[in-house]
Length: 243
Image (cartoon, rainbow, N blue to C red; front, side):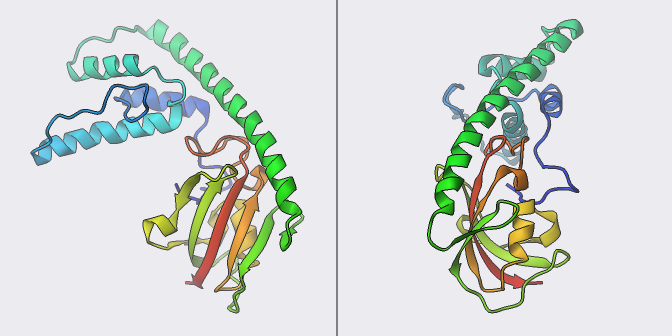
């Protein structure tokens, strides 16, 4: 997952864009238990491996965008028919109605997840604010200094190098440069607003724990599939340097 937000928009796609991606890709989803068992077909040549990756990566994109509502068996059938160059079993009139229905189903799922995230996040932030050493800014950002740094503080125009781990309020890790074993580098002003604020408060060498409310994270859109709409995010961030 990238923390970078293009312009002022959240990085997650709107429902219509997600459905449009499914129309364009029509790929075989992979991984969830409800889907067919993983393939064991041998991939002994470069062409087979490349072909496999085309399907795998396309399906991953679909799952990230509409995986909560897609029907596994039907998606697999559509993929197989397309590969076989068979005519589509869904005509254009049916297609429009079908994707409108999928869009509504996705919106309903997101709304349900968003309500749950609001309740969980509000409770988490209220409890966290009472902990010793936790400070809350005017924006609602909560931070705790785990290690004090003595270096300069970056500006919004500068690029920084950081190590971080991001979790949901239930402790599930959704992103971690630490796990990847490689620090992340990005312009301070091009990440989620909670990070923009926190980084400019941190001296180089600092390690902070951040609790970021949805209004200054990914907001009502979330960042599917890992971050629900209106989710509160928790980060441990170590500011390694300024580029």
